[in-house]
Length: 225
Ligand code: SF4
Image (cartoon, rainbow, N blue to C red; front, side, top):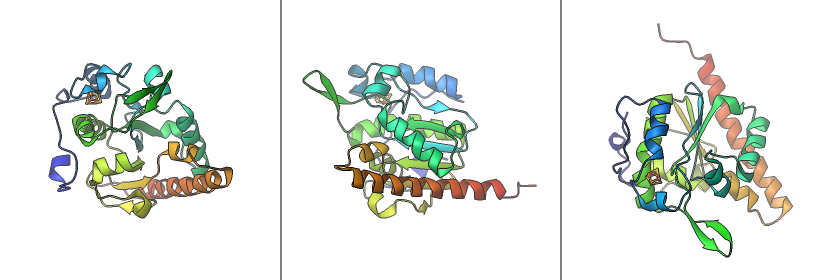
């Protein structure tokens, strides 16, 4: 399975991340810690690699680590991660059955006073980092991939992909038997008022329930003889 073989011509170009041959998750984690394939390593505290079981049936893919994740060296441990945990529980997905990661493994930020403010990764940075995600997918072979937000979805499906249009649908892909896209949990945290936040949370849970539904379907599939 190769991203380059999937024919999505608007996907970012792959670059030279030092992905080791015959990778395992521990090998990937060590190699990614020394990655210099784009300039983001200069500003991030550390590489924030994916986390979870090698046999996790569900892979959750976000955009990039945030401030808390950059400091902790772990994905989805800040406020967005806590909201994700709540939504997963409401959708009936056990977080221990998930592998969580990001398209970009270093925190891209800009200073604003004493704060470090999230800065969206550009297409070159996404392309430079994508081999790590590709290797994580090949190593864990998830049954369901959930793209959290436009950056993750566009990295896998191309720039023209619109989460607002495609969210909650099962999308055709060679990356996994089932791929579902939804919003990034941080977008719910940025909702302007409680009513909007509650509504967006309900929609987010609904999208994750679609992932839970197809996961249950794949559990029921007879194994190959
Ligand atoms: S963001 Fe990705 S490609 Fe860029 S240096 Fe970090 S790990 Fe390497």
